[in-house]
Length: 265
Image 1 (spheres, helix red, strand yellow):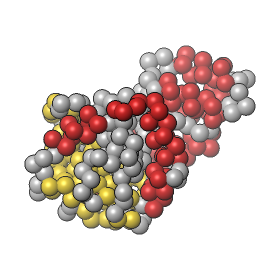
Image 2 (tube, rainbow, N blue to C red):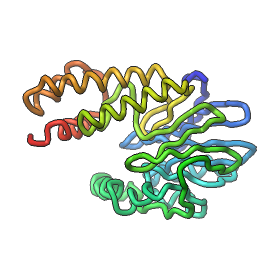
Image 3 (cartoon, helix red, strand yellow):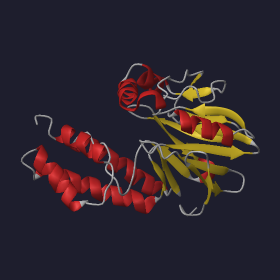
Image 4 (spheres, rainbow, N blue to C red):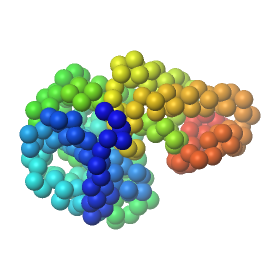
């Protein structure tokens, strides 16, 4: 599936990029919210499974209206646990570590920070998980998902459309990289995606990407490590990255990455 093979539908807020795989349709919701969140809906035979949640009230209302003619069989809540006013009656699926991440871990800290930053437009309530998922296959709404726990939450394979979901990729924007070892882990993961030959890589903060984008990100991560190794301090590192990637978005993520590579500064 070509990542550009979709038609676009405008919502009250944001837009849907609709991919047709035949038996399954993928509705990729681009929220256009302050964090560039993406939400994915997998539709099969009139039944739908939602992956991640919109977190801003205007997006919640827009997507709720879009889904009114589908029977939502459940939601997979991985890295984005906020926005519990969205589909409160639906079954919510997550691994135990993903639940903990949103309720009391790093995800909770992010939700608290976003609440302060965005105020009443942000729905800080956390989805209550009804079903704890083990590693491996989970059938929801007539679709098989393969659950891969990660350090914070979980990634998802969707074999029927040869796609995989993970938190972040973004081939032309900065990512949160927690030092050289973390970069190496990201590189290994992306190399595995290339070896497996996925058609689409879905992420929480970008439109669907492909394996060329994965290789672009690998090259970026390798270069990031090299810039860090040759930089005397945080300011030099950030300036060096910006000089080599002047068109990249996500400066807030680059600031966080700089802090990880140079914590003493």
